[in-house]
Image (cartoon, rainbow, N blue to C red):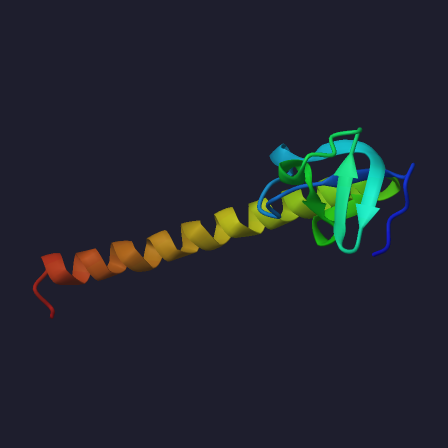
Amino acid sequence: MAFKVGQRITWTGSLDTPAGLRDGTVTKVKGDLLWVDNQHRPEDCIYAAFCWPFEVRDELVEVLQKRADLKKAYDNSMALVYQLANDVKRRGLI
């Protein structure tokens, strides 16, 4: 996505949870890097690939929450596999 100076954006460093979402206004663009809210130091750059237009923030929150729910469901299902493996070992079947 190509962002422009003055555009409102939402970004996150992780797509695992909506908890880390941040918002701001692009104030500098250089290639695939963005700076937001006049924070123009090198360490303040954000990769454009981590950014979304602010207009889709609510949809992004929903998607990230769904991802978190699916990850929790997967982790819970794996716990069942580990419980069975432990039970098999306790019973001396292997």
